Every structure is written in structure tokens, then in C-alpha cells.
Image (cartoon, rainbow, N blue to C red):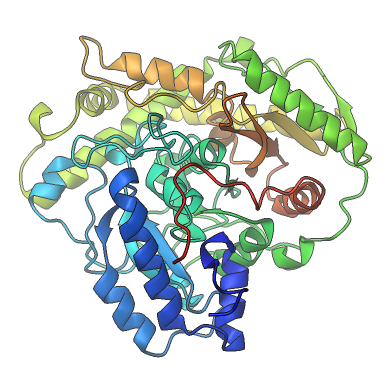
Length: 487
């Protein structure tokens, strides 16, 4: 291999695809290298729980679709998008025990495949994607490659750890309360949660929990994010609704002048929790960098949403109802009603809450969140803002075990999750696009993400300013303690 290709683990997906298209590296060599890297570091990280190495080798030996990432190694999270016949356990020991495999191809997984990506495995996730870490009883904890005593974020924690450690340059993730942005923040990656309905969940889901969940990826670079968003966006037949198409391809926004943006800095989550001063300082530092690039920063009064509704409890009404629905679905698969012995304590507590939430309460929660969406729309329109800037999280990466639910009250884990992820879940409720960028670090050298939030459907604005920040303050050369260097 040449000097260019000898450190493939350092490259983003676009650069790896260019090696294949130029003939410098074959697609089979690219996949074999990723498998070697996985075998080297995954025992320490436990990020990949379902290796699909033989299947990946077979795919790479044949003709791959001529998409923008032809031959690039990829990982699918073990929750959400999947291909027919793949293991699918969603962090649940019952599905693991019965050897559940996904019954069909999801639309998103087929779009990933058509982009030329080769799936080499599936990644760890907390049970049903509930917590902001990846420590399921079924598969054990994934470790953060920056500090293996800490969690990798969640629920897409396995994907985040694998990309940060250099196994693959990009991996599938999804986000129902921050599960793309949280692992991006704690692993030093880019994590974009697209607008509601930008990426289809077809054919098994329309809008999970009335639109809380968004599917996409965690990545190393903004150009990978723009190209991937172009490739996977758009509705599928039967979707309940869709997001309008962009003015131009998202890939063309990379390098485009964002102009002078008016950015509102918010450092107090509307849940009422108190963030670690370290992340507030990081957000203020990022605001200073944006101001130096010519943008206008202000600190408006937070919108009075917290005075009008209980954001956390209404979110939990929707979230718990979703877990009750999942329990019913798995019960149908296994042919009996689930019991507390089939799931973790927190999962069971949420199932019970969901079953005790009335249809009226659920619809009221959705309605209140729609009101919050309109209030935020007014903040942009009437307040004259283009973006909102916050810390991505309320604290630095947390030690493994922080979200343990084995005590007398498993809901304590959710309280801790709310304190940690108080900046992210709100924008699942409003459906706005939000991105976490690796713009800061703690004194311990741990990544701290900065969140930017655009008006609904304006991913283009996020990609423009994110690319500008990436160029001005690059993060590509940062390496965690556990990183898979090519041999």
C-alpha cells in the first residue's frame, strides 16, 4: 500500500471511497483492513456484538453498487435499520435467547447498501435504545475509546465507539432523545439528527412514537454527513408524511459561505437541570469561535416552555407508551406476553407506565410538544435567530455504571439520563434538525460536543456552518487512547 493508503483508519468515508475508485486499494482490501482493525480493538471496546465478517468478505469479492461510498466498511446499530436475515436483538436478552433475525430489508438499510457500503457487523445498544449509554445485560458494556472506564454514550454507543476507534469511518445510528448526538459528543464525532421524516423508517414503522425518532449515522466529517444525507433522504410509499426536499444537494453546502448568522446561545436546559460548568464554558468558547468567524452571538431569555408544560413528563408519556408498544410487538414474536423477567428493571418500569398512560394523555403530550415546536419557530422568526447553540450534554462522558437501574427504584436511571441529556430530547419533541460537533474537550482530554439547532427542515444551514467550523478548527487528527492503527 502507498503512504496515502497505509493509514486508512485515519480517513473519512469519502477518502476511503476515493482510494477504491482510483484503484489504489481494492474494495476487498478495504474490508479486510476494517475486519483486522475490529479484531484488534473490539475485544477491549465491545462495540461490535454481531460480527458479519464472512458476509462482508463475500460482498466485497463481488460487484458492489456504484454509490458514493462503494467499498467502504460500515456498521449497523442493532436497533432500527437492518437487512433481512441479520441478527436483531435490540439489547434484549429474550431476543438474544431465541436468536431473533430481522425478517426483511428496511428501506434505510437498502439505501445504505445502494451507496456501496459493506456492513461488517452490528453494534451494541442499551435495551430498546432507552439509556444514553450502551450497557445492556444481554451483551455487556461498550467502553469509550477515549477512557475505557467511561460509557460510550447511547443509545448508538457501539457505533460511536467503533467509529472513534477507527474500525470504520461511518456507522448507522438513530436518535429518539439524543441517541445520535450523545455518542457523537462523548466520542468526538459528528452527529446530525435530521428533521422529522427526512429519513424514512419504512416499511415497519411510520413515525415511531409520533415522530420522536430519527434515523441516520455518526461520522468523522461534515462532507460524509452531507453526501450520506443526500443518499438516504426522501419518503417511501406509505410514509405518513415527509420533509420537503432541500434547495440543492446537501453535499453542495459543504464549503458554501454560510453568511453572517444570528445565533442564540442557550446554556440552561429547559428541563430545569443544572449543567456542569465545564460544558457551559465549552459552549461559550464555541460561541466565541463563531463570533470570530463573523457570526452574531446573543443570549436571549429562554422561551417560557418550561413554565407552560412539563417537558420531561410529557416526553416520558410518549417514550413509555413506545416501550409498551415494543413489549406488545415482541410478545407477538415470541407468542406470549412479556414479563418482568424478560427485560431489564427500567424497561419493565417504562412498560408499566406506558400501559397506564391513557390515549388522551398520550395525545395531550403530543399536542403540547407541537405547541413547543411553534414556540421555537417563533423564536427563530420573531427573535431573528438563524440557529440555537447549546452544549450537547449536561456533563462530560460518564463512568460506566452511572445509569445502573438495579436499585430499588429503576427510574432513578432515567432521572440521571435527563440530567445528562437535557439539551437533546427537546429537539426530538420539536422535530428540528440538530448537530453535535466535536469542538471542545475537558481537562482530562475527553470530548465535549457542541450542539447547533436549526429551524425545521434547515439541515442546509447546519451543514454550511459545521463545514466552516471544521475548516477553521479541524478535529480530524484527534485520536482516542484506543485506536486501531493499520498494520
